[in-house]
Length: 199
Image (cartoon, rainbow, N blue to C red; front, top):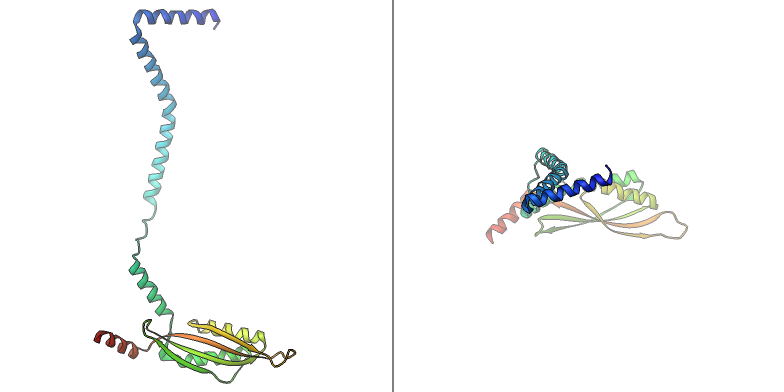
């Protein structure tokens, strides 16, 4: 299209707008603007609707959320897990057998053990503090401690003290202190419950 043709077309539009009035021109401009917006925005709106439809479908197919656990329920579950992890006070002789078996397997000399029982009345569990004077080289002592903690998972190694006769001596004398945490025997629990009821 040449420049004179464009000029003629604009002149005709101008004259037509003068004849038909300003209102018709504004209406035509609004119709053209609406059509342009419709053509420009329609694809974006369609893709947005598709995306939201997919999001809703994903949300509906997702597993339902886990129920919220209340603080008292969580505390009760943790307390129950704590008591389940404790050893049994009625079978404390097995702990001693585990200690001597672990010493034999690790090649550590264990002749005696000192025991001190205690009871935590608020926590409703018993403890045995066990002090073991042992002899062996460092590797054997370490293996012994690992075996005790693996075979008696409710035990804690609280203290280790080492003594060597001379710098050239490979044998080490050690004093190991374990604390074993135990569930009280049923009769002790029943007595504690009865004492609380009397209070």
